[in-house]
Image (cartoon, rainbow, N blue to C red; front, side, top):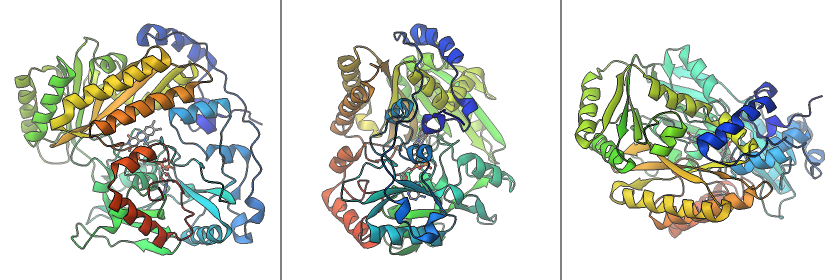
Amino acid sequence: MTTSTYQLWGWGRSEGDEPKQAELEQLAPLVRDHLGLPLQGPEQPAPLAELPADRVSTRLPAPLTGIASSAPIDRAAHSIGRSYRDIVRGIRGRLEAVVDCVLRPTDESQIAAVLDWCSDARVAVIPYSGGTSVVGGVEPRVDDEWTGVVSLDLGAMTGVAEVDALSRAARVRAGTAGPALEEQLKAHGLTARFYPQSFERSTVGGWVATRAAGHFASRITHIDDLVESVRAVTPTGVWESRRLPGSGAGPSPDRMLLGSEGSLGVVTEAWLRVQPRPTTRWAATLAAPSFDVGARAVRALMHDGLMPATCRLIDAQESRVTGTLSTGQAALVLGFESYGAPIAELSARALELCRDIGLEVLEAGERGGAGEAWRSSFVRAPYTREQLILLGVLVETFETAITWDRFDSFVASVTEAATAALHRVCGAGTVTCRLTHVYPDGAAPYFTVMAPARRGSELAQWDEVKSAASDAVLAGGGTITHHHAVGRDHDPWYVEQRPAPFAAALRAAKAALDPAGILNPGVVATG
Ligand SMILES: Cc1cc2nc3c(=O)[nH]c(=O)nc-3n(C[C@H](O)[C@H](O)[C@H](O)COP(=O)(O)OP(=O)(O)OC[C@H]3O[C@@H](n4cnc5c(N)ncnc54)[C@H](O)[C@@H]3O)c2cc1C
């Protein structure tokens, strides 16, 4: 019998992916030399502490007992996502709140039965798909009024159910994770072309519920752009929108579910717009004398209507750490893709614009070394992060979006506030920035924080830094999240950000769809 808790906090799917002591010992000097952080010995993950009693399983009606699991590791693994706070708590084997049991429906009638029974029994229901939430979205932090909390895991409802090649759309079940989606679409010569960094584990249902964003920088950024229609089971019935390429018929039913984070209904499937696989790819890496100058080039590209598929502006420090560029300059990784239309003119024009603004072209054409270094560090990041955490590094990210008119001062003030908090709380540390998504009217800055963690106090340390950063984001006019969702962690700032009449409308919608208020209490529509 295994004693590993890796499935609780790790990114890999098998215990073989768990960081080995020897690997950590090898990485430790790099943390000191490359990141400039003090050395801390590798931490040995603790066994899972005893969990509170399961209050639900024995009360479940017979048809639902067959889909229930109350195995301790299963309960624990469904009670956290994959934020820094989650990983630290998972490594320590100590969670403050744990779901009573996990229910794995195989069809919509079982979901409806769960919602019915939970409404009557005063049991809260937290929809769960890939469990990659970084904002406390799947965590059972709920009031005492509930007689229990269950995690409703959509993992048994997976796969591409139907492809409409003529309209280029696919009906996909909610529990389908990125790799399975792409593999099944590939058989039809198609792709969803939607790659969040959590692609390996996150799912279509989770993407719709959180308004996730893929790694392409412009044009199609959020899952919203791909959603043709959504089907969800709510406590008061099935909500299914019509498949349409566009519609001006009143407020959009899809928009209402997009970003509802499990508080209005359980998404069971969505029709997604898909496309042929790209046949031509072009990539370039450029050096910018500063992040601000790089941002000016990005703005010019967008204002010129070029809309590159990849447009990652990475500040000098992050460029060095990721191995993209070690010259002390900011890096701009650009890319165009096409499945037919020529891109030579677009790419030539992009380089010309960037050169005019003062950027230097380091490589262009087929994918080159620097761009590859960045891409490989992007894909490996979740694995590297858990190794760093085991070595005592506080490492987390936060992200936002802002219009160009406030961009420069915004990035400066948020960086300053986060750095000051980091130095106050951790005594040292760095805050780096890159642009993940770019628009004609603004951009989405994404900040990475690294600092020496004080073992045992990490959560309090991060909470203080995150709070200072979030205050600065709202004060500067940004959004509390561009794509990481609201969850429980962002709720105080989300409540401040949204208009009060809109909050009242959301609460009314929640009351109509979920009269007992069982669905993900404390998230988005409930505050
Ligand atoms: C390393 C890492 C990288 C990440 N990179 C990105 C990124 O590039 N872009 C991005 O947008 N996000 C990113 N995220 C955040 C996260 O992956 C997204 O929020 C993702 O959409 C969550 O999908 P999931 O399937 O894991 O959902 P879960 O974590 O299971 O759930 C997320 C929320 O949605 C609700 N929910 C889940 N499934 C359903 C459903 N079927 N019906 C109704 N509600 C549901 C849950 O209750 C919860 O509130 C990243 C996270 C990590 C850890």
